Every structure is written in C-alpha cells, then in structure tokens.
Image (cartoon, rainbow, N blue to C red; front, top):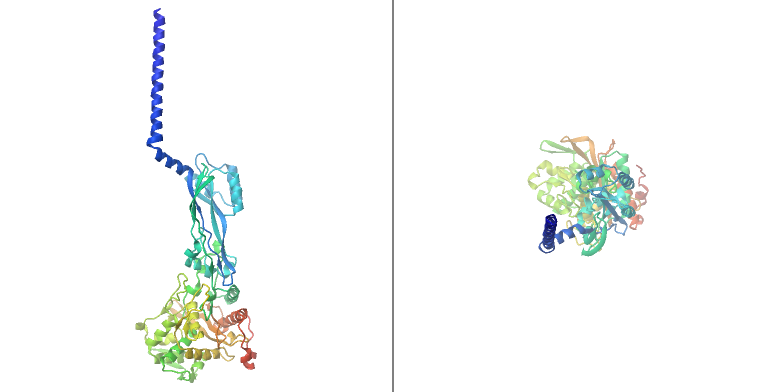
Length: 570
C-alpha cells in the first residue's frame, strides 16, 4: 500500500513539473510574439521590405545626334549588364561557370574574385538583350542583370573628334557628347519591385520616378562634306607621313561648322583606339604659329587704321629689314609692291614695315575683335584660346613677327573664324556646332569695303604665278593664303620641321565657304603650304561647293585663268 502511494506521488510531481514548464514556454512564446508583433513591428516590417522590396533604375535612352540633314551620327542601343553576387545559398557550379564564360565570352577572373570577396562583380557590361533572356531562363544562383544602353557611332572615326564618346554608363566623356551631356542624357526613372532571394523580380509594385529620355541634337555638320574633309586630310597626312593634321570648313553666312576633321583619328566604338594622342581634337585644342596665313589680318589692320589704302605701295628694298639685332629677309628684293603683291609674294619685309607703321594698340585690338587670343565660344570642351601677346610684350621684334604669323598662336578653328570675317564683309559671326535656322547678326569688325579689297588681293595668291596656285578650283574664284612656319624644337626654330597651312574662301566675290587646312611636320623636302595644304583645300572646296549647289562663276572668269588650273595628285 505504501509503495503505491509513493509511485502515485512521483507521477503527480512530474505532471506538475511538465505543466509548469509548458506554461513557462507558452509565456515566453507569447512574450516574444508580443515583442515582435507590437514592440518591434515597424522595425521588422522595414527590414522585411528591404530584403524583398527594392528599387530598380530605368535608364533613360540618350538622345540621338544627327547631322544637319538628319543623318544619324550617334545612337544608344539597349544592352544589359550581368553581375554575380554569391552567398552561402547561391554559388555557381562548375558547369554553370563554364556556361556563363561561354555565353558572355569572358574569363574566370571576375567570377573567382566575386566568390573570394563575396561582393558583387560585373561579368559583362555589354550584353545583347536576347542573351539576357537566355541567362534569365537559366535561373543561375547569384546572377543578376541591369538594363542599360550603349552608344553606337555608325560613321566610326569620321566624326570621332567632334562627337567624342561616352563611358559604360552612357555619359559623355569628350567632344559634343560631353558639351551637351544634360541635353542628351535625359533623366532615369525608378520602379519598386519585389524580388526573391536570388534577386529575380517577382512583381512590379509601383512606379517611383518616371523615366524621361534625352533630346536629340541636330548638328551643323554636313555628313557629305565631313567625309570629304576627313578622307582628303587622311590621304595627305599618310602620304607625307605627317605628325598630324586638321581641316575646318565654315559656312560664311551662318558661322556653322560644316566639317571638322583631325588626324590621327580613333574609332569611338573601339576602346583600344582611345589613346590621348588620337582622341584630342587638334582643330580646336591645339594651337600653332600660322605663318603667312596671318598676313591678311596685318593688311586689314593697316587699312582700318586709315594710314593705308588699297592703293598704297610698300618699299621692301633691299629685301631685308633690320630691327635691333635681328634682320627680317625675303627670298629676294621685291622692290616697291602693292598689298596684293605683298600677299602673292608673301613678303615678310613688307608685312613687318606695315606693322611697325600702324599703332600697336589698334593692331592688337583688331586681332582681338577678329577672335584671336580668346575662345571662339563654340561650346566645344577644352577649346584652346591660342596666344596673343599683351601690349606690354609687343616689343619691336615681336610686333614685326606677329605681322607674318610668328609670336602668335592660333587654332585652326580660330584661323577659319578670322577668314570668315573677311569673307562675310567684315562681320564676325558666332561659331556653332549646332544647326541654325536663322542667320545670326554678328559684329562688324572691319568695313565691308576693306573686306572686299582684301578678298580681291588674296585672289592673286591663287593665280598661276603665285604660291597658292594649287588651291585653285575650276569654275570658281578663290581667295586665300598659304602659310609655312618653322616649328620650335628644343626651344629653337628648326629648318627641318614645319607646319604648312592654306586658308581660303570661295567663291571669292561672294564667299559661301571658308576652309582651313593645316598639316603638321610633313616629311618632304618641299614642306610648304602651297605644295601640301593647298591641293587638299582645292579638292575639299571643289566638291563641297558642288554638293551645296553653289553656282559656278566660270562665265565671269577669263579663259586664260580657267585653262591654267593645275592638275595635281597626292
């Protein structure tokens, strides 16, 4: 009987203990539930949303860039970016890695680096959309994708220096792509989505920010003229094994850049060609001493000063001119010559004497008004200002040197703008790379009469007996000037290294186009602007005038002039 009572007592004790433990556990669960559901509800809800809800960017498509006739020069195409972010539950198998390397055409380094660091690594930033769908269907662990755009340039290197290029984020890095970044880029949007633990999108929840695509940009450039300028320049630079070269073609009336080419060039679609010496737009960013192409501006200053007229005669005898310890010389004694002969013979002595006779303040002031020593305000990034000495540095020798294109530095675009002033009857028009629908007013820099005199004088430069005869264009009168300047090598002017230039306009009586050709350091014994740059000018101008349907002046030209036009080939 006693045994039974003891067993019964033990049984009831165990039952009470279990019941007590059960009640304690229940209380703990209730307390935990209260903590989670009431006290920490908002915090945990936010954490849950961070893990399952996220925002994805909706990249805005960058606006197209076209030439003045609507020809597409730059367009953004949709692509994808594939990344890998491994964790304990989402790592790739050996077979999956092999599959990814094959479909993306990549090595294993980024996959291995992602697994080593546990951080997200992009495997490829340029993946066609059809491959994205295939990779998504493969349901690979840790693999995610972003939608994006890639810039494509159909004309490759022909427009490269003007357009520039974009980076992997489709942001402008050089040229007009950089200058008009805000206009072209648009604004990306955001969308709230629900993802699973493998980052797959399960549901599009809401639109947070609307995407706004970029605007298209219509340039002033003409694809046909650009191709001509690029091709002729490249042939000349290659033929003469020159260091570099540039061409600028301006519309005289509107100030629009119709063509701008530089050599060497690069392919903006190919990252391996984007090296500094190729990417730089030399027509805007490099300056040089223009040599005799600067003499028309000396004559313009002389005429504007009132001390000279179109009939003035300059005594260049005996073919030399001493300034201090320096002597300026001509190839021979030209005697007493007119302004027209000064240009056609390219007399340094004549230009120097004119420069020394007119006030330096008015000379420098006119050069500034013509656009030298300052930016053209074209809007091109990193545009060089060139170099125009302050008046305090216009010592006699500097003053004389400037008259024939030394001690002054210009860019090809500045030189073209200066010649456009003469072509536009003395009016300086603002330079633009964007197409204009109206002719800008401009600023009167020299009188129309003096501009006309200078154009008439420069026609003699392109006559059969003069230095620029190879710049002649059949059916049109040409006004222009050759230039050959020695380069500075080791702080001394070299007799073996030159910059050769031709700058001119046509038709001479009522110019439509101004073209400047500059070739740096051609490898030849006859390194002159007349021999090397003038033929390039002629070919570009001849085809451009015809493309623009500019009426030939042949009926106004003498038979002797037409028949004397030279035949030349590179």
